[in-house]
Amino acid sequence: MKTVNVIELEHRYAHPPAAVWKALTTPELHALWWAAGDVRPIVGHKFELDMGRWDKQPCDVLAVEPEGLLR
Image (cartoon, rainbow, N blue to C red; front, top):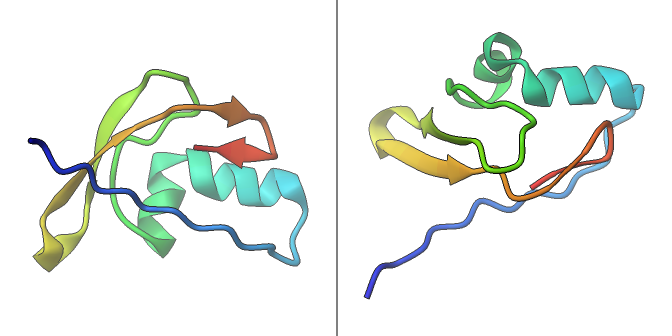
């Protein structure tokens, strides 16, 4: 049986939603604060986050609500 890893984070930032959304969905910005990867706000998009010494984490975009939800 395949083990599914999940990264789940809910946090409220004291920044405008547009700025947070841009940091979450722009690969170059995402790499500056969390992990490098070809993240895109498109349901069905598959990519990997480079977690450094913890290896690469495969990811699937399951849901998108611009400036509100990236699952």
